[in-house]
Image (tube, rainbow over all chains, first blue to last red; front, side, top):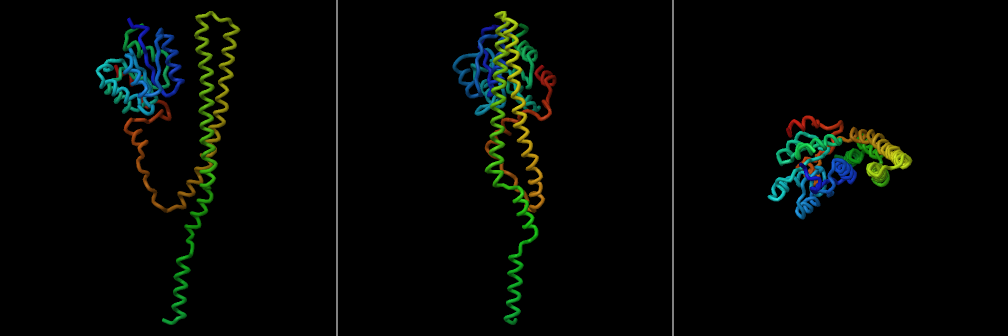
Length: 127
Length: 168
């Protein structure tokens, strides 16, 4: 059973996307929601406090979501933290690179609520 | 060689050297039509300002819409009155007006591009110079290294279904 109180970090440089994802997560029952506007800010938050899930955009400055993923997978404390990439990057090279780097799932923008729910279920089981 | 003949030859050489070939005249005219000074001091800064304003209007509009949607979702729990729901829906409709304003701003940008394109083509036709390949900047290097391509013009290149298969 997934813990509805686990901290979830949503990383995107567009506040609109963070608000949309937060709203969808709240509808799914999650209520401990955190945010960061780029990979560097996210990494600081992850180092300060463990999170149960990271949902991140790819295209951000100064640190991309892909770099964040690589750094998380190289860190023993974050190696197993589930990571979902939500991005407009839809080239094969991006999807393959994310998979090889250890992303648990990949959602291409624009996305809808059922898709997000389905990816969460694939990581945490049905809820 | 007589002085007169020498003078004549020198005159011819000087005339040839200072004559303005037709190509140069054409190039000058093309540069003039391009109006680079007006472009750099007025047109391009105006376009940048329009894009910036459009971004801000979009952000404001979307923020107002999300505010109301989040309130509607909260109202569900609080058993809101139909009048309050109606007021929130009206506010969402009003906020959608940003699309009209941003559309007009983007039209201005399109107009400049439409206007600029033939002037640049004219200049390219007049110029016989071989075009230099722009060196890779630090920014473009990073974008290539980090696979930062941005959204594809005609929707995702790889569909969600294909991605799902890959992630199994």
